[in-house]
Length: 142
Image (cartoon, one colour):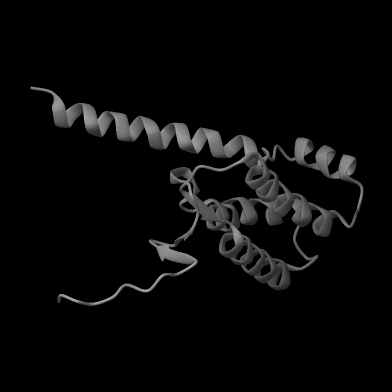
């Protein structure tokens, strides 16, 4: 089709990642945060206080963290974006352990071997970059 005008939008969803209109390439974390909270609250609502903290945390690690981090390995995140995803995880720990003390939250995260998401994201990006490098190397080798 020719002559069709494209609408100017503030954000766009592509493969589950929300891209924001900006001078630089930027992704929105709002949908990812909402999806994390939705899935974590669903798990917490079904399991409640009947399961141990270990079981709940394993469910969160396997079901909710991937929802939060989906597609972010291809997005450039700022320090404030990384603090937002850490805040999301901290809020869940606050709810799970019924505390408002961030030092208690950090102690619980250390005890349960829960790596901060701001440290997990660069590892995912490194894996993404390595796969891309392997792909491009194989394209241009003779």
